[in-house]
Image 1: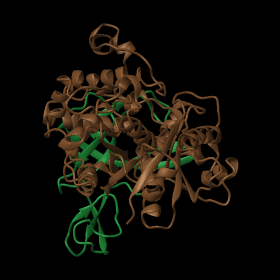
Image 2: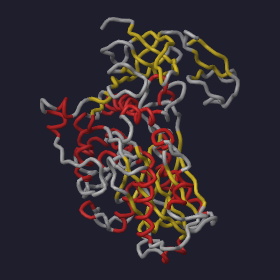
Image 3: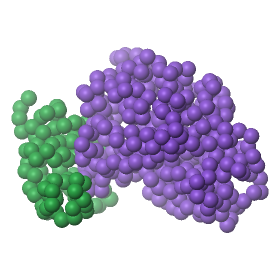
Image 4: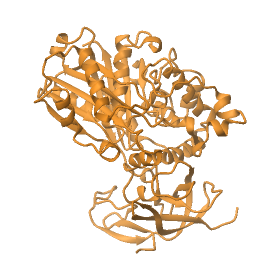
Length: 393
Length: 115
């Protein structure tokens, strides 16, 4: 297997965008192409990650559309759909196609345009990833699955509403330093949880989860360009290597898992990625975790191995996950602040890590970061993908 | 239309599944028989959802995970209010939702005891 490096990254601002899905995909792609200095060089393949374009935007076969729009013909092109893990799945495909020797230069662009439909339609579109017989017919949504998980996690590990809110506050503070982030604001614990107006400012979405425990519904796109190590010098002086990859699955229905609070696929995917990179959680300098809900950042930080089970909430409280802390988590603002255009998220996580490892993350830069970790959480933890990135080739 | 809650027991290892799988999650067997899971169940976890998806004409939807006596769990709609973990419930199969004219059916659970 050949070494694979990332030589270009780009993304759109996340949020409510007036541009259409294809425009967003194109904007992010062009930014990555310019970052890599692609110029007129041909790409071998383009993978587009997207979850709900067919439902929300009446657009499918996005890969074919993008290569034509960007005049990248006759590059191979396809769309990758794997729920919220679509972005990392597309990067995985690019990784293996280069590592195997089939391709030399590949672009992955992920995007979603979710704000054109009413909230209940977007919520339903995302909920189509739930079990078609045992969950979707009931009205199950991702927030409802997260809420039921939270209730069990709180009971077992003593996680508090304050600790959940602290994840949100930290990520919003980080997001203020990220020009690409969707929800921008410096919120305080009293305002979202303890003042008389908190129930208005921060109403329940799925009890015990409140508005500020949930990521927003966002539009946006992100893009990375990968190539074989031996070609990297043609495109960049600051390559970032994909040093580890791991993926694992779990039962689709949470109720069938032996222990519904155990995110087995997270543990397995993280271990595979870290083992492949010959690293341990202690070696990681910066992490982008899939905080679609605040509880997930805490639970994932434990299942990856950054903290012991039951210690993740206390770690947030102690500031260990802040920029400058023991293990900075989601310096980008995470899904909570940067936003969650579903098909873009896995790609955006890697884009942030590349900026961090290059030392290009501006005010949110984690000092001396040389090893990064991303975790993209598909379904409600039934398809999880992790990457380990290292500075240099 | 069925009215009972049906589980699927592997003929080889007797593991009961809900929902149906084409291969047993324990022994990989491929033959199953339907079993009535009964109506008694206990609430494992739950939520009151206020951001509902398409297909509901109500402002709040209660959802939960319940466990039947055979130690088989299922996700269900909860009908009522003031639920608590460990509460005894009665399950039935019923109309749960209608999306674009298509009717969906699933498990609905009701309280059987006063708090």
